[in-house]
Amino acid sequence: MTGATSMRTGLCGEVGLDDVGARVRLCGWVARRREHGEHLAFVDLRDRSGIVQCVVDTSVDLRSEYVVCVSGVVRRRPEGMENPNLETGEVEIGDCTVEVLSVAEPPPFLVEDRADVEEAVRLRHRYVDLRRPRMQANLRLRATVVSAIRRAMERQGFCEIETPLLWSPTPEGAREFAVPSRLHPGTFYVLPQSPQIAKQLLMVGGVDRYYQIARCLRDEDLRADRQFEFTQLDMEASFVTQDDVLGFVSEAVLDAAEAATGSRPPAIEQMSWAEALDRYGTDKPDLRIETAIVDLGEVFASSEVRALAAPAVKGLRVRGGSGTSRAALDALVERAKALGARGLAWFRVNEREGGGGSSLDSPLARVLSEEEREGLLRATGAAPGDLVLVVADEHRTACTVLGQLRVELAAKPVGEGPHRYVWVVQFPLFEAIGADGHPAAAHHPFTMPHPDDLDRIETDPLSVRSQAYDLVLNGWELGSGSVRIHRADVQARVFKALGVSDEDAESRFGFLMNAFRYGAPPHAGFAFGIDRLVAVLAGEESIREVVAFPKTQSGSDPLTGAPKPLPVSSLAELGIRIAGR
Image (tube, rainbow, N blue to C red; front, top):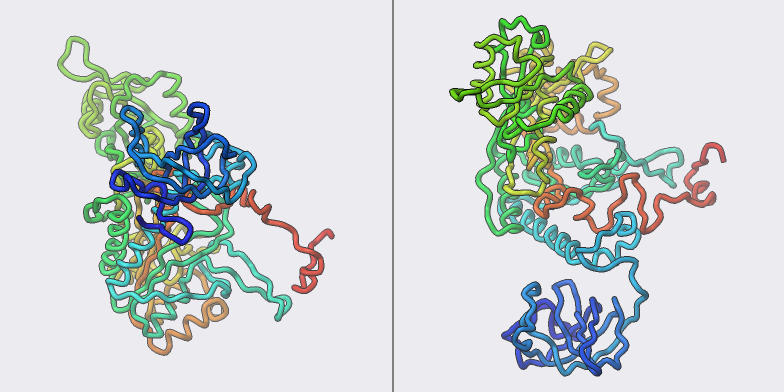
């Protein structure tokens, strides 16, 4: 058996029929005790590998979560007494002697997966919560995933290099954690939100292929898929194209998925950002949901219905939704408005009376022409029993509203199979024009424009595509990356379009731009969140379930009480004074 040490011969969950007759010594926690007659008791002994039943003398004082060492002989359980719910359910440990290694107070909750415990209580006593089989499995799954990623990257010629945790402010947009300098009062380091600039400098340094299982920090509001601290696979490579990077990362992700699940997913498909928005209403499409948004512009191009007069008319088929109540439909209309739409039209599809086709039940049905009714059914593929939702609005609004309703109505847990990976490529280089007349960078200002769009940077910036790409799994964005700008002339044009002056560029990015003066190779990279990947593979809705010591949604740590105030003496040493004190 594995897990043998000088204190134990193996692990509880590994004892089986092959060990019958062998004397073993096992260590763990008392999970449960059941009296068995006047002199004997059944004790379930638990360690990280599982549970095994031990038959002990009732004179031994054993209580829940006592830490013990049990020595005894493995024997087959009596016929009819097997437990099919345990890996060790066909055997037990008899002739036991017990040594109590540590006594325990009653735990604040039952250490079993069936126990329904408030999350705040679980996090306050995380050391107890981590004993639960679910948490043990999640953390070991995480280790399996990280190990597979490392092997894949090393097999592809990447070198693991650590980058600094104390860094200079970066231009990536997320709020950073500041660290005051004791040796240089009034100045600050920041904790890196990513190793972006450091890894680009490694490319200038000739490293060629870099990767890191990187710890990153962002001072942003927390949610189910975001923590202050997170772990990502960070990589960068020289003399590569976008397709090369997608291949490197796909290999690592598929290796990790195979290691975690036992089967290898198919090759990861690709779609453009424009297609993702048009068909799924989001750049994070959940491809497990079969229905997609369809364009109804041609169907209603000549419509006289004012509610359908808009730059874009989009529709969504909801299979089996014709039974939706009027109250539920009214709620959908309000939800669409809350998401930014002017309104929402709905059409319940029923069997035509007397047979021979479909009829539409809707407040708008009577004002549609027969051609429009038939066109709606044809374009959406709706059949009797279905519901069709229609939004007429600006193109992006119509798509995003229906995209959100598509996800909400399907209600698929993030970990529910199958796992559908997709690369989303060709993102816009710039976002909407600001009040200063300049666009904002959609990713970061070092993203290389699509070569076919270079001539439009100055004349039509919002139409310029980038060589940026995201990896999405079951509606969760795992990570993003891009081909980087390595040419000074292209970088200068992008800075000018963004309204970044030469002085500002030198102040904010000078050390990177100066490095490029000494010969920067074409390079590209990517980073994806390991926490998110593991959460999906584990079937968890929150990454807190795959992180050993997470923060709550409010950013606090119930276990340690952090964040806490520092003593005045410590603040003084750092040259800091708290306002109002």
